[in-house]
Length: 242
Image 1 (tube, helix red, strand yellow):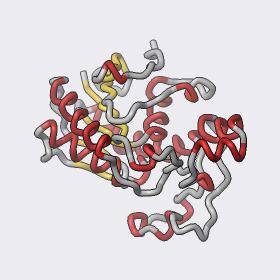
Image 2 (image 1 turned 90 degrees about the vertical axis):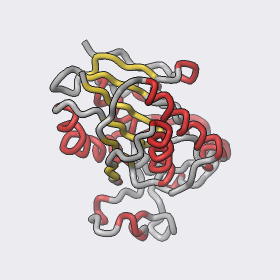
Image 3 (image 1 turned 180 degrees about the horizontal axis):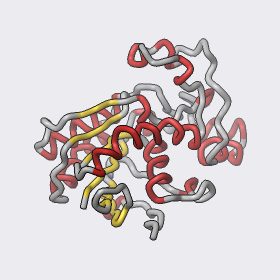
Image 4 (image 1 turned 60 degrees about the vertical axis):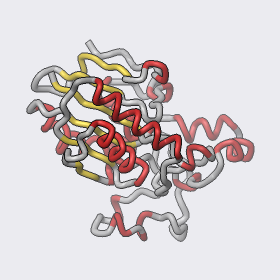
């Protein structure tokens, strides 16, 4: 059996402020750092020996992984970072307070933007200083591949090829891996791995800093077992496909 740990970053500064973060590079709060260290302790206690790890190119995911590996006493594990594991891009909502946005546009509209599968928010203004086209971490990437808004569907559209071409082949050969990423990029992977329907994925929540440990069948990426390592902070999981 092979193991895959999905780890959403610990609480970030904009999580705390209830703001739409997306691709903006905010850091962890003190609580988020504690969640990351606790995640490492839980992963160490699982008994799984991991062979490598992946992260997005955003600080909150990278630092969560670093702190977790430190807690596991496995800081030597190789890490690969890729923008395709980034959080969903929230377009014109980026930086806005979620409660204030709901007051302005209505709770139902904001719920659609946040949770529907295929309805993106309005696009980000190209002149906005947080546009990824002017961020050096994306230098060398075709500008046409960098979003100015995303739905969960288009987030999955960029995550899935990276999963299929880079991560899944290692799992199939028996390597145990960690992916440190974000609520929506991990929801996209959960949708893929559990075969969750478009309407049902809106109800899937990924808690911060709580490793979701998946057991995969030999020589495949078929999920056979799944559990959050911190049971007290666990969220409901989709049914494992038969």
